[in-house]
Structure formats: structure tokens, C-alpha cells
Image (cartoon, rainbow, N blue to C red):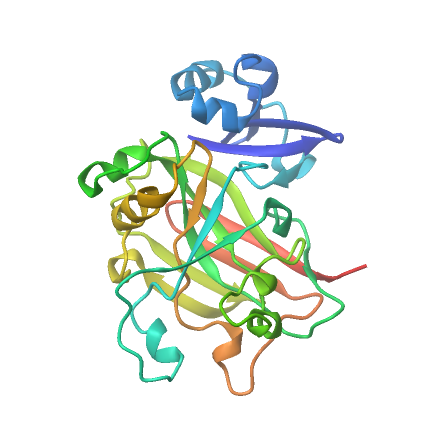
Length: 286
């Protein structure tokens, strides 16, 4: 299934994307599945599938405002420098990492597909990073690697927008440059693991104004999905709806000479063939 969250006439809801539009699950399921996060936590995928069977769509995609699929996840984990060749982009002669680089994003730093991502007033260095995202479906701590994929509910996409000059304000972190309000996006929907095998391989590409900038495959991840889940759950309990952005390929705007920063009016598309397209236009902060 392709599950999404949205605003319809200003009211929040969630549903399933089908060929002809969206089947509303908010009304059809109700309690205890009041939103997509509770559906994930309550193992409600069969209930959702039954509720959609034979139904006429309630909305066209163009009739709603798409939100991040899980609008208020407890945690958004982000992995840095995870594709082969990414370490070499830093030109610091460092060895390949033994452990993943890790930071977190606030939910307020991302919008849904079709919404504007904001170039902040204070910086000219807004950059794109196309990424695959795994969504946790089953709570766990100290998850063994051989059981890790059982904890994946599904997958979605992320433009892990970064304000590059603000990444260097702190000596030991990149948090500031990764958490500007509405600087990134997640969506358009979650494709559930029963329809899209997390084992992959999965392609990932990013276009800016139609120009291909990034392209790679999860076959080239240094830390694959099962490793990331086992690693993260060593120190933190993973909860249903938690998201793990698994890293971006080479080709971000900062790596061009001169750098190619995003500006208002630019259109960024992140795509994976098994999921679809996450599309956002850059807007200026008001």
C-alpha cells in the first residue's frame, strides 16, 4: 500500500493512494487508528487494506495538501556519508568510517511533497540531499541485525535540505544547519514493506530543474538498512513511525565548483522507482 497524510479543506487526515486518487482512512477506520502513526503502531495494515477494498477515491491528489507521511514522528534519524565515494568528496584523506555519522532532525524542519521548501533569509547556501527513508513499524531495543528488517514498516523519500554555512557553527555537530524550519521534505507516501522489499536493491536519484544531480543504489551503502537498525537500537528504543534517512549519494550542490546553491523557484525532485517522486519548489522565507 501507499499510505499518506494530508490536509483536506484544512482538516488533517490520512489515507491510501490508489491509481485514481486517495481513499480516506481517517473516516473509515476511526479509533484506534486515528492517524497514520497509530495505524503503524497498532499493526493496522490489514484493516487499512480491507477498508480500501472496492472503494471509490474520496479525493484527487491535487485536492489535498500532502504532509510528511508521519507528521509527528518521535525521532527522525539521519545518516551521513553512507554511500561509497561520499567519504572521498571531503578530500581530507580520511579512512572509511567504522561507524555511521549520525544526527537528528526536528519534525518542523520538513514539509510534505508539493509544499515549498524555504531558503532562509540568513543564508544563501541551501542545498539538496536526496535520500531513501526507512520507517520503523515495530518497537525494539538491542535488535539483532538478522532480525532488523522485520522492524521496517515501509519506505519513503527525503530531501534532507541543508544550510551549508550553518553546518560549521559548532565544533562537534551539524544540528543547526540541518534543522531550519521547512528546509527539507519527506514523502510523498510510505510504500509498505509487503509491497516493496527493504532488502532491495533500491535506486535513488535527485534532479534540480530537470537536471540529474545525484544517482546511486543501495547496493553501494557502506552501512545497509539492517546494520543501521541494529546500531541505532543499541542505544535508543526504536518506535513505530520513527524514520531513518539513510544517506545521500555524491552530487550535492556544495560539491560543484563553484557550488550550486538552491534559489527560489528551483524545483527539486527525489525519486526511487519503487516509491515515486518527492517534488518541492524552493521558496524564500517570508
